[in-house]
Image 1 (cartoon, rainbow, N blue to C red):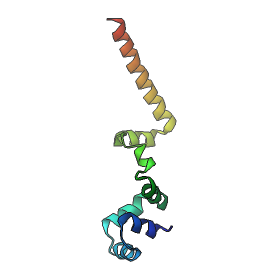
Image 2: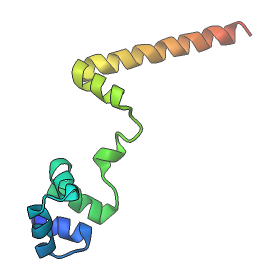
Image 3: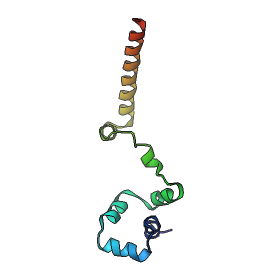
Image 4: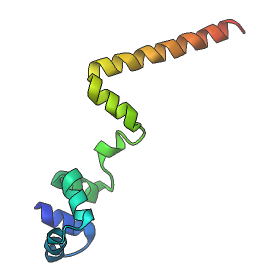
Length: 97
């Protein structure tokens, strides 16, 4: 399936309408081209979801930026250290009870 056919199926309109909307530079078509591949659209049509978006739906924009800027290893190390500190604080609290 080609990209224009995938978009047409997603939008429930004809391929001709896709080309008209693309020529008119409608925002939804610009959005789809910028952020979704043909495989993404096909995945959504088959499953009613996009795994790549499901994986990050609970992650803040700040966390995503930090991950991108610091690199995966450093970011994950920092997150692990934060969790260790939280666990240590909870252990201390429990010990005082």
